[in-house]
Image 1 (cartoon, rainbow, N blue to C red):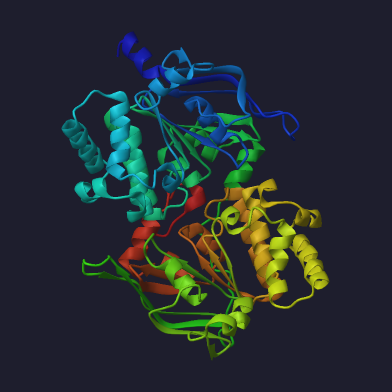
Image 2: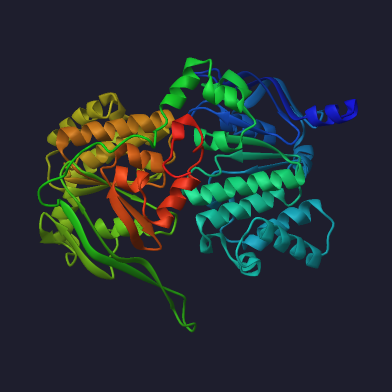
Length: 548
C-alpha cells in the first residue's frame, strides 16, 4: 500500500482538540465539557459513551453548530475535513449540514415535522442543497427509501410521521441524513427506545450505508451492547471530562478507568437465573382472555379492523414480577392499558382481588385505581412540569380522601425509600436528572399504597448505572411491601434481572411464557429465539445469551 493511500485511510474526518464548552455562570459546573480530545478517522465508527450529563450530546451539538442558547465553545477546535468550524457563521454552517455532516436524533417523532409528509421533508433537504428537477428529487427519495428498507416507498412518501411505526420513522430520519452522502454521520441515541430486533436492523442498516458511502460515524449511546456491535473506537465521558479512549476491545475487555468498569459491571447479565420467587395465593390482578381491536379508517372508506391484543390471559400475585417482552406493535402496552383500565378492552375480563372491574366506570373504578398504579417510560412527560414534586406525589392520596398532613408525611417517608431527600418535594421536575425523575414517578405510584405496579418501559431510556439503581430499588420495594409488578420491556437483560415469570408477545398474541430460565435459556418458539439472537453485544462477556 502506498504512502498516499495510508494517509488517505488515516485522515480524520472529524478532529476535536481541547474542546471546552462553557455553561452559563451560576451553576454547579463551569463547563459542560472540558479539554476533550478525540478523532473520527475516515470510514470508522467512534462511540461516545457515558451517563446522562457526561457531555455526549453537547459535543454532538457543538460539531453541528447547534449548541443551545447559553452554551458556547470557550476554547479548542472542531476540525471537519480540515476546516475549523468553531466560530463559523450561520450561512457556512447551513452549507455544511447535510452534504458534509448530518445527524440522526434519538426521538424521530420530535425530529420530524408532524404536518409534512415524509417525502416532503426529505425533498426539503434536496431543494436546499441540490439543483435537481422535482421528478429527479422524487426518484432520489424513493431510492433512499428502498435502501433503508422502508416497505412500499410510494406509500411512505405520501405518509405523515404519525402513520408510521417507531422503527419506520427512524429509517426516515436516517434516509434524510444520508441522502446527500455526508462525510460524517452523527447518531445521538438512535436506537434507545427500539425493540431488540428493530434495533438490530437499524444498526445493520447504518453500518451497511456507512460501508457503501464511506461515511464516518460518531455514535452516541449508553448501551454497551450497541458499542460491542458497531464501534471501532470508544471514548468514555464522565461529567464533561474524557475518562479514557481506545479501541473497542481494549475498552470493553480491559478498561483502565474504575468509572468504565463500573458502567460495564452495571450491565444486567442475561446469564442470571430467575430470582427464585414462587408466587402462591390468589392473583392480585388477573386478565382473562383480553382482546382489543381497533377500527382504522374514515368514511367513506371501509374501516380496517386491527387486532392489537388477541385472547391474552395473565395473572400477577403478591411479591411476583411478571414481565412482558416483544417487539414494537406486539401489543405489550395495549395489554397493559387494558389491564390498568386506561382503555376499554373489546372483550375479556379484568379481575382485582377476585372481583371483576371490566364493567366499572367513573367513581366505581376509584378503589381499583388506588390498588393499581402505573409508572410510565418518560417521567418528564408523566410529571406535571408546573407542579412541585410534592404536589404531584400527594395529588393521588388527596383525591382518595387522605388528609393533607398525612399525605405529606407519607410523601416525605417515600423520598427516603427512593433514596432522595425530602427537600426534593419543594422542587420541580426540571431540577432533576432522568433517573431522579423516575424515582419520583415510583414514589408517586407508591403514594397511593397500591397492590400492583405496572411499569411500562420504566428503565429503557436510562443509563446502565441508573437503570441498575432503579431495578434494585424496585426489587427492594417489592420485598418490603410484597406488591405485584407487571414489567413491560424490550430489553431482555433487564427482564432476566427483575422478572420471575416472562410472557413473550408477538402480533397481539402470547407465543411463549414461563420462568426466566425456561424462556431465556430453553426457548421453544422460533420468535423467542430470534429476540435472543438479536440482543446487541451478545458475543461479549457481559451479554452471554442462550441462543447463538
